[in-house]
Image (cartoon, rainbow, N blue to C red; front, top):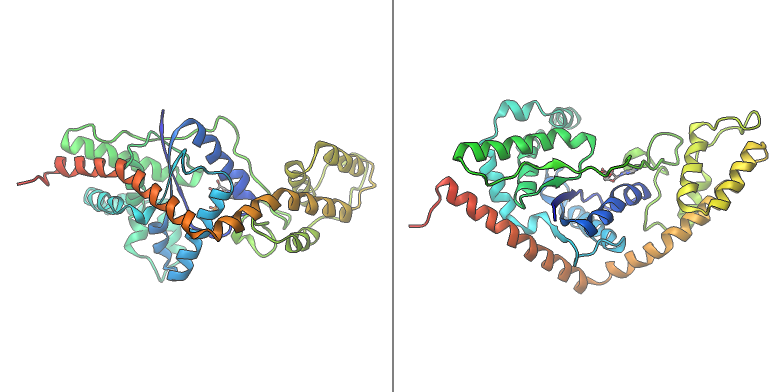
Length: 331
Ligand code: AMP
């Protein structure tokens, strides 16, 4: 079985884009691989969150992943800061990472531009921490988006450099996980691009969102003035609503609105009402589980402890070996 490692950003409430994009992939992976999924709270510190926000976001993401079906018995689900071994390996990797190569990383340059008042060393050495997260479990595969490919390349560089420096084969070079199909993109409600938390108010529907609020957002979704001729192509905002409908509604419902559109009889208000109700039916059981798990502190602390213990088993061995190799040896 291949070892897969993936980090989850503690961003708080998850939306339908996260659910159909990231989480569905996690569910597939957990059945077929030996997975280590961790909530990346050390990484979060580069943006200086308040302690309450950090804790709240970690909890929310943990709860929502569990509610979505991530099974802590199948995978090792842990919180990054519960594994100080990661911090130690990060320190060791920092010693062999060069300023020049770190400064050239695209995401570092972007972050530095975005937060010019807080260009901290953690931002610069982000690739070292990410490499530590991955190679600490000797991962073979890492599911990464386009924006992370450069980081994964650096992980391979650091792994190779360590192996070469000490003439060992301690760390395998991890490869990008390939899902074998196009990654799904869930559009937002604001008429453009993709559903995202930071795309502006009303663009995203959250898994834990109340029905009333879902109705309000969907009814306010951007459309156009209607089809201009029979069977005309749809504008992007309208196509987006149809895409969402295809995900949460029955094929009959989708066909009904397709026909209405093609015969120019469509009323977007009706389409939105149906879409809102079908989103609500889809999210209702998830929302219920989120509320239930969120209130169950005993369960959460058990999950987190089991995850940390399992992660430690794998990480402690790697760090012990690395220490020995480097020359930190017992007297
Ligand atoms: P974010 O916290 O926005 O970076 O999202 C975390 C992960 O969720 C991303 O790496 C994607 O895999 C997935 N994701 C986010 N938004 C969407 C979307 N609109 N459609 C599909 N997947 C998404």
